[in-house]
Amino acid sequence: MSEQKTYPVPESFKRQTLMDRDTYDRWYQQSVQDPDSFWAQRAEQLLDWETRWDTVSDWDFEEGRAAWFQGGKLTGGQAAQ
Image (cartoon, rainbow, N blue to C red; front, side, top):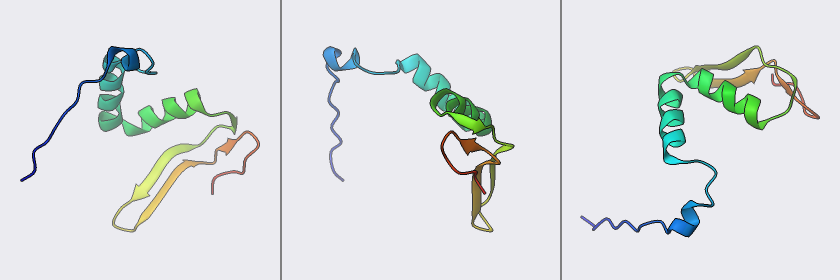
């Protein structure tokens, strides 16, 4: 078994991050407990929508099917099928 090494992150680098540890932990928990809510919030926050989506996600791993943000259209983009 190989030895696992960890290296401390320098404080100067930590100050450049876009997210603190508390935000990461909160977002991670939300992404696990309520993924559709998490991704809807990120989509609203990070993307420009011409038309808001009808459903955040629709998937079935047994069928091998996954769709995200159905009915939505990004500004300058095409509608999701």
